[in-house]
Amino acid sequence: MYEPKRQHPAYILTVFLEQIKNVLIPLIILLVSGGKGSMFQYLFAAVLIVFPVASAIIKWYRFTYYITEDEFRIRSGLFVIENTFIQKERIQSFSINAGFVQQLFNVVSVRIETAGGKKAEGILNAIPKEVALSLKNEVLNSKKKKVGLVVAEENSVQAVPLVDISLTIETRKLFLAGITSFEVGLAFAVLASLFSQIEDLLPHSIYVAIYNQIQTFTYMMFFIVFLGSLLLSLIFSTIRYILKFANFTVQRKDDRIIITRGLFEKNEFTVSLKRIQGVVIKEGIIRQLFGYSTVYVEAVGMGDKQEQGRHVLHPFIKTKDVHLFLKNFIPSINYDEITNRAPKRARKTYYSRMIITFLLIASGIVLLPFIHFWVYGIVLIGIFIGELGFRNAGYTLLDRTVIIQSGYLSRTTAILPKERIQVLIGEQSFLQKRVKLKSIYITILSSQFGRTYQIRHLDEKDVNRMIGWFS
Image (cartoon, rainbow, N blue to C red; front, side, top):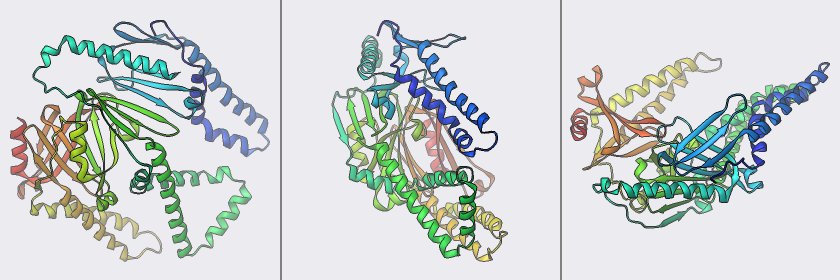
């Protein structure tokens, strides 16, 4: 580790696949379209393939890494040499992942991240797993030594007991989690995107035949096709969720939380308990019916891009069990039920906003052919959503923690320790002032940017109470 090393040659394949996917659709269109200019098309397609291969080989050859007593160093670049120096004590996140290609060659990718960076400062795409674990241990041991030198400065911080605890998720629960994850919209969007490319991918005669057949469809047939697409999207999103969180394990070792997951793409995240800024509990509308939720952790440093910068601490847990789960894994986080709700006079404010929104939507839809004024009935949906927003708004104020809850179709509960809050703002519009309501915005340092949680239309006395608690 102390001598400059290149990555495993599998890096060439990973970089090639990463680059080729950006030109995959144009490449397919070039190869299947044919015509008089086919020779030019094949030459251009060859260039699209050869260039990424050459680029990947050069990147592999010019990339070296090694570790010193105090730093992790990376050297890369062809015409412009880039040297990256990362001090061990500044490393906040050390993630080990293994995608499908990496698993074929028994290698892993590593992401090294610090608190102040806007992106991962060090990325190794293909190194042996034992080397990655050695790097990780080297960094952690170095940080422990550093902590030992300054332990006298941290006597005021409550020590976390050195307890090892682990939890895994059954496949059956992952199946239920996938069905209730409400990611059908994402899968439906993917199917719609593929359908939009069908004219370029199918021969013209087949495309015309399908188009003519669709023109003969009745409203009932369109409805059946819609339900079929919805079912297909549900199956796709469920399989995706299961593959994403397969073999999910969360462990607490000393002062670290270690999260591993994935089947074809294995991911491992390590989060220091000292870097945790808050905990978030999300409950989709379907999961609320069955009493389940997902628990996320907000931490300093780069987060999981798939989860909007957060780390999933538990993908599918009974909401009533969250308190015990957090007590075992993050004992420094105090959690309690929501005790203060938005006042009844705030209900009209929540309703009016949704009613106006859905009236505008209905007014646009009614201009379409074959659409009648019954479409204004969707305003009832707006009233229903407004009611959900009103019921979900609330907070609990503890000695050193504020717990806020909000949301419409999806309910979000944020547990925010006082010492982690960066900014707390109470805001009151002219209309809110008439009915003595206020909104509150709380910002914490999360991932590479701050994240703000909010509750609209609380009693102004409650908001003033929170401002006084924080100041």
